Amino acid sequence: VKVDHPTPTKVEVDLGDRSYEVLIGYGVRAELADYIPPSAQRVAIVTQENIPWEVDPGRPIGVFHIGPGEQYKTMETIEGLCTAFADWGLTRADCVVGVGGGMVTDVAGFAASVYHRGLPVVHVATSLLGQIDASIGGKTGVNLTVGKNLVGTYWQPHAVLCDLDTLSTLPARELRCGFGELAKYRWVGERSFEDLSLQQRVSECVRIKAQVVAEDEREAGRRALLNYGHTLAHAIETSTDHAVAHGEAVAIGLVFAADLAHSMGRISSEAAAAHRALISGYDLAVRPPGGLDPDRLIDLMAGDKKATTGLTFVLLNDQGHLEVVAGVDRAVVRAELARFLEPA
Ligand SMILES: NC(=O)c1ccc[n+]([C@@H]2O[C@H](COP(=O)([O-])OP(=O)(O)OC[C@H]3O[C@@H](n4cnc5c(N)ncnc54)[C@H](O)[C@@H]3O)[C@@H](O)[C@H]2O)c1
Ligand SMILES: [Zn+2]
Image (cartoon, rainbow, N blue to C red; front, side):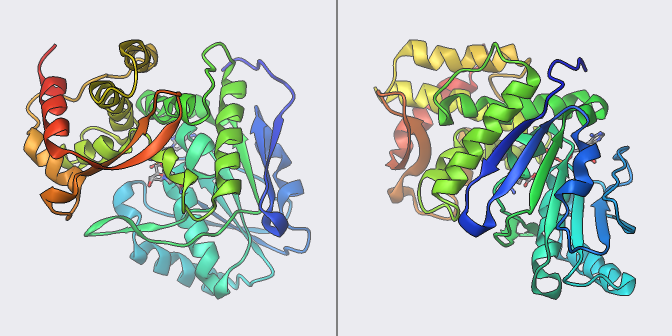
């Protein structure tokens, strides 16, 4: 990775007395000690064995490994982690540091929020998806067998470090997934950033997310727009048994949401084509693999709601703004989806 910006970028997440800084740049993990609460005596580092990045918070550390995949994002992992914290003697006056992708920061954040009723957590985000999305905004959580992220808390971190050096070891597919998620910010933030460097792009995404979170921490309104592309994405992930990864599914979901908006007369064909162009430019597929059943996808998108209520999508309007649109007619979605699933 080329060091194109030797000076790190700082973005503030403005949440009153819970405000914090996100530091983005090459090598910023070296700044970690300055971002730990000064009073913290010891630091519990939560990470995974396959993450080859060490950090020095400038205090005695304990390192706590969690399992390497989404299947370990469970209450059992939280219980194991909190038990290990207690055995080590971690107290409320100390600090937790999550070093990893979104799975690690979601778990570290959750454990930090409930252990001793809450202690500070600092994230060192090491995946692109983690840096532009998961580590920012304070949503934590784990999965239940009946669904993803069903148990969790809002627990804002004390600081977030996005070290772009760490992306050099990220598997290529994980990097592409990060770009699938990154693509949504083009429309959430209503600005294009194709010509920007990686540091500038990550910083722009963090700025957009920080602004949305500052306005709507608990997702009463605008924060829901961060789910652009996610209605179909979640259905594709489930119906392919996660063979299509989240970021890949979001990329496809963005293209579909644009096609749907076009078929509903909300946006021009040029605006829809811009979605395809952006996604292809990141070397991501613009349509799902063959063999998916449109009716199953529709059922998954509808959740357990009845056919009559219609479907909910985040869609562009003719002013180029995103909005949450509930009650989209199933038949309209069905027709568009049938066209979308046809082989090219
Ligand atoms: N809290 C939120 O607001 C929010 C938002 C979006 C996603 N998420 C969550 O984030 C998770 C997905 O995050 P993700 O895409 O980062 O996946 P992940 O954390 O599972 O990481 C993907 C893989 O890459 C590895 N990895 C991470 N960084 C690495 C590095 N620098 N070098 C080598 N390997 C590395 C991980 O060990 C893992 O095997 C999901 O659990 C999702 O629910 C949370
Ligand atoms: Zn997502």
